[in-house]
Image (tube, rainbow, N blue to C red; front, side, top):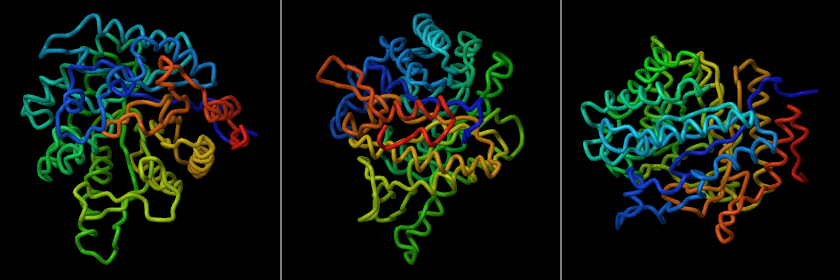
Length: 405
């Protein structure tokens, strides 16, 4: 007996800067090459997905997946203000055609962490015309590609952009200003709504949504007033404000993406506010606690929006593929329980399709269902977890996912 609906979407996800290679015109490339930044290494060629996308999609489809989320690189499409690259748009049209050819439902993310350097240099999301400039870019994409985009993900993790880039200084532009972070949060909410409006008028067949990373927030020391206050600030900035916005009225899209990895222990003494997993608990290469119960909790929290849910990211960085399969078992079990309780989830996209460039951490963390042999011409290495996951996609049954796969 199947545990999931027959029309459930099963796939995996990537983002342009993490897999394409050679994205030299965005703020992250500059960050990687800035002395003193927290970037471990430059992204360089990544996994050369920019030229290998068709063979990569063929591989994913052969493993039983029926959907794929990728991102459009804004800095390629609009390399200078108001100057749109026909070559870049044609490339992404071919990418979308390839997904269709291989039977993969397309999820195209319009903005996934990276900004064109010209946009960053005028203040990024703090610039007074930031929303209008994003709207112009989205319009160009919708006109050129909207007929092929089945699901448009407007903004990836606006809370992470707000907090990590503007409050805790971990991402460019490395600000530590809570007021700026609050402003950026509001700006990104408005930018999402404008993107929905553009697609409604230009590409009405596309389904549109925003992708939110949600986590249960807990003070590292429940009796510490500063930890409790920081926890409440983060919970509001990263969860409550976005749920409230999606329920405030107006057209906020057709679905909402949930991205979940771990629960968050908030330590006000740390510049980044978030502590690693407590000693003795199972954790990942990122130092994150493996906490599947939080996945079920966040599925129910995001259901408060009233929108259908697609899990647009969920996964683990590990060099032990048996741990990845176990992670899939526990998290997909939480997903099934949520479905059984009536939570409207339409699909699950694992992070990540491939080992990739993990931002400040470089190439050390391995999130991929498919490994990359960087010493052998970026050869793709199918892990047992990819095969086991494909069996779940083919059968809709959790029993198909075994550690021995």
